[in-house]
Amino acid sequence: MRILVSLVALFLSVILLQLGTGGVAPLDALSGAQLGFTTAQIGMLGSAHFMGFFIGCWWAPRLMGSVGHSRAFAAFTAAGTIGLIAHMMVVDPLAWAILRLGSGLCVAGCYTVIEAWLQAKVTNETRGRAIALYRVVDVSGSLAAQLVIGVLSPATYFSYNLLAIICCAALLPLAITRAVQPATPPAPRLRPAMAWARSPLAAAGVIVSGVSSAAFRMVGPVYGLQVGLTADMIALFLAAFVLGGALAQFPLGWLADKHDRRTVLMWLSAAAALSCAVTVGTATMGTAPVFLAAGLFGAATMPIYSVATAHAHDFASDDERVELSAALMFLYAIGAIASPVISSGLIDAFGPAAMFAFIAAIHVGLLVFGAVRALVGPAPSGRTRYVYTPRTSFLIGRLLGRSRSGD
Image 1 (cartoon, helix red, strand yellow):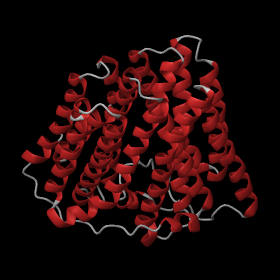
Image 2 (image 1 turned 45 degrees about the horizontal axis):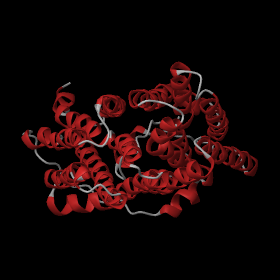
Image 3 (image 1 turned 180 degrees about the vertical axis):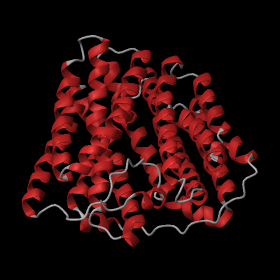
Image 4 (image 1 turned 120 degrees about the horizontal axis):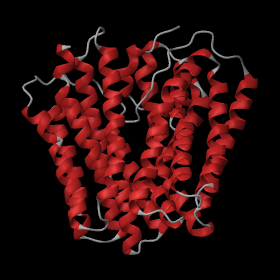
């Protein structure tokens, strides 16, 4: 219990970080629509965020090694705060894209510091409880961040300044803690080809996960506006997606440990394609069907990353797990960078339903690829335990590495 109490400062920073940066994507989408940005320009903002996220994942371990945990966290938080507070000073899509690089950098950098600190503080006896609490805190903060959008007015100084204040407040718990900074862990080597070499299906799965999640989070508000949702309804629309994905992790984890993970991925892909059709079909049926459809979409798409990473780790040795996790995160980021631009362009060209047609198509592709891979060879004889894997930093593999053990 003492070690968990000592992690309160870290978890409080996670909540504040989620509230401050997690709301910027839907707020940007709503603000951009009000200010006359095109759908493609709004999509560009989402892609810029994930570009900053990738840069932060790569750079953060190296910066920690140079200046330490606390200073690195302060630097990344400052980048996010500047990115937020400067929005209404320069109202231009390209300028906002540059500012969103800062928000992505902030998220990846701060999570890298937090997870490195958490990894250094937990022991084998407390690891399971600490990681479980970390996941609950992370998901709760993400859910709250979506709901905050319902009470913020788009394109106003107040809204962006409030998010900037909350983001800046994430500095306080770590700044005033008396805990000694841990030693800096070595930065994992980035070898994206390792993911494909260990499991082509897992590599494809994390890319598809990045495409579907980024499209919904970054361009979903534009879809909502075009089908008639109000700002407060869009907040619930996004929150239903997060809640559905969170609730699905536990039953999907049980299934992924009991059955061939390739089969689980194929069923998830089929469910994701079906949920896309349901989401489009319920767009004009009222709020309850729309929110239920968003929850179904989250339940079908969000667990794909964790199932795919578990499948990849079935083919890896213990000394490869950290680098494999970083490679999978890199592929997720690639999908997430490309997705908002493609989705927004399709909406401009063919209407709001085109975004979900695109997402459905890539999941059908994953389903077919999974069937082909199932024919190529048998499932691995030894399997790791399913672990819900947050998509937060390249160091998450080190934090979760010991949580994976053979059945």
